[in-house]
Image (cartoon, rainbow, N blue to C red; front, side, top):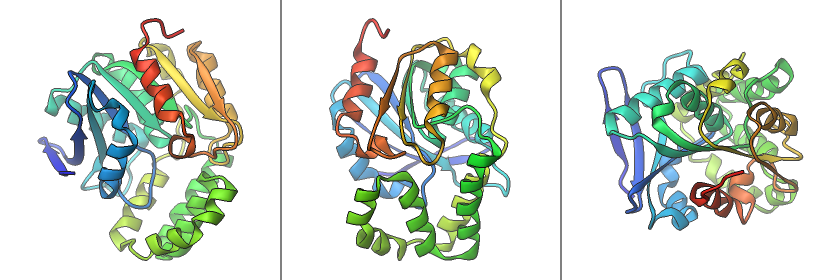
Length: 265
């Protein structure tokens, strides 16, 4: 998979794309220790159901992360990348932190979005839930990639899956660089004081919320609150962990069906 870079006067951002369809689908990934660019082939395989009907774009965060980089900054930079690439009227899926970004883009730039799926995300991060992000950021600051990788994976995956893939995770941690950890810490701290509840009434496009009943990162109530505010459909997974977008076998099909349905309610 070819990794490309879009440059504007203000930023440079990596992305990759696949598919040959006339419709546009954008994936905004969540926080991760390694860049999603390192897993481009795996992402394309996971979302291959979209390849015929859509041209699919997957974006990273900007290359030159400033010391302080809020979720709103991430969203506005990504919207600028959309503009530079001529992307508009796109179907967007945002996972976790990517879902926070997707809400901001849908609210502030409705011309860019036609439908949105929000997975395991939140519109407000209170101090209790932010503590986990700060804990991860401090692990990244310490340079202990193994402890960071295991702590992160333990919270986002079901316990059974975490135990099954523990050795694989340990091997992956060995490939984490100092720059990976620096970027991770900046992005994790970018969630501090997140509160975009006031933006939700500005979202006019159809929205589907996919939450998780036992979400250990953001809490089930975060997804439920978004759906209640938007009066939009919601489906709550159980037993899949926060990263249901990776673990639930029918997750991509639910996104696809929502994007393709004439009547979304």
